[in-house]
Length: 370
Length: 230
Image: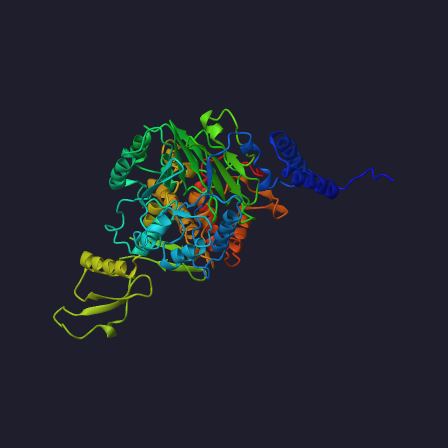
């Protein structure tokens, strides 16, 4: 007798089998078919699609020249003080190590430590040794203001550097330079650190790149042709979003001016702990997710191109957190993958920014920040 | 001059700190009895031991000092014994706080002197504003301090809610789906303290809870209340 009804589980397993069998004989036409099968499987299961089912949006576009991954904003305490942030970083390391194929390198986006203590930074360094791909480090304010970078430099070297990779010129800046607010107040190093560590602490000064690094950047870019794709890593967004939380770089215009002569520039920044997208002329800006906790969106100044992520659920400590990938195209522009741990990943694609938000629009959330 | 306020301390419950009051010749500070007056300096020299107006700090003033000299001496000793004396100003400088409503319109007009509710003085307005603000400032101090919250994992409220963002007090009471019941803001504060903050249970009447509520609500001043909103 033929079974008329198939259970949800059966339909899911059938769809899943078809999907994995299909992968073995994939061409563009059958790819679309198995993508549909994957979506069907996910829908039948009632689950949000898995990360592995998501390359649909990317596959429809030109293939990227290469990929790198990112982990950022882990805010580590020593594990006897708080093990949650430690476990989150370990999870992110597992995620990037599981990527197949492996990324060309992994960017660490800053704020490895919460209070810049040597034990926090050393713990972070130890965990990040587990990353299989080469690691590129960037500094954040939480790493810096206890000893003004002494321990961080000892572990990771200079915070400002550049390198070339597959035709793209990469620059890493220390964009969290604050003017001296501590000496006149007679603050101890830990008081200085605690002040900077408070996002809404107004005693600290705005972030900047500073004259010294601007000069370094001018020299570094001097020999780079304007047609060369440039990707810049900075902890703070290299534009002015919301000063009260230092979602802000005070001399952003000076940095942008140095980058303006390049046809395509991408800036990848940490600090904001959220999906954040902006474009100023030929410069495309992308935020990254934190592993520690998500920030709310700033109450004003949000760039028009930013499609927010849905408001995180406080009852799930991992919600709104994650890591991700950056798929770099030959022209230096990128598809930015936000791998949200508790949700389907969201891709903010190159085409979305190039079209000024008209095409390839990422899904809009139904719960935004208050 | 007498400035009294009650401040919540880091330890158990409220610590009352009664400050100042420099009507010294009278009851402002307690002289530890004439018996303790040192015998030296019979010609007007020597010191008198006193307990400062916080009721606990020992001090000493020149036996011959009077008036402003005496008051200044006591104030100077009290300031040295209380390095946190400017806590309201310090907190306001660190964490931008919305000011309480401007009630100065009440000084104008009114229904005349025979109507008592129309008579509001500048001094009253100042008192209302200062006391209300102090309540809120105390909430801000706790909100930003893992230690005062009693966190066992070094987590404070501002780490997820800078300037109390995304706390949306204007949406309560509402059905909290994760808890399966309708709750008040304080229930969510309590949930946060017990879970992400990993602190001890805080009752709805606890001075810290009241101060936290005061701060969070104050930060959303001007927002329209829409209870039940998700």
